[in-house]
Length: 150
Image 1 (cartoon, one colour):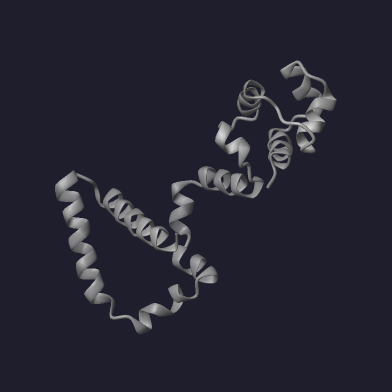
Image 2 (tube, rainbow, N blue to C red):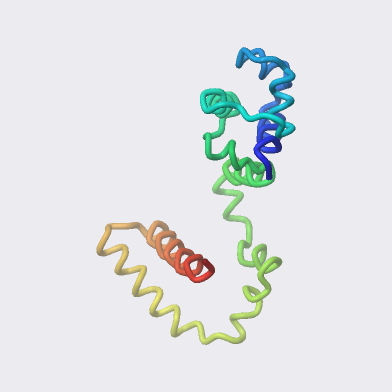
């Protein structure tokens, strides 16, 4: 996605018009339009003001993805009680079918024992609670996976 598209999507998400943004930044509406059409670029100070105005970091503004932002907001607004009602394995299995079938194929007991030992070690060594130890282990697995993809 281009910077112009990112600026456009961030502005629309914040509910501001080009005129409102221009007034707050002390530039013309045409300047905002040119930024959003990738005809010109805002300087770093203007970019920082835009990120504050749009309630995103400068990094997020440069790489603003409206769909990702909307998903993040839905997750943040979802209560813990509602999250507990969701069968996450079933939901993810729609995208990754192996999650629905591996239990019939894999001898999970062998892995469960080893994973439980790792969880116990994380809790004992670092004082993590059950959920935090699980999240650390999950994140470590994700890092291994991502390193192999790169």
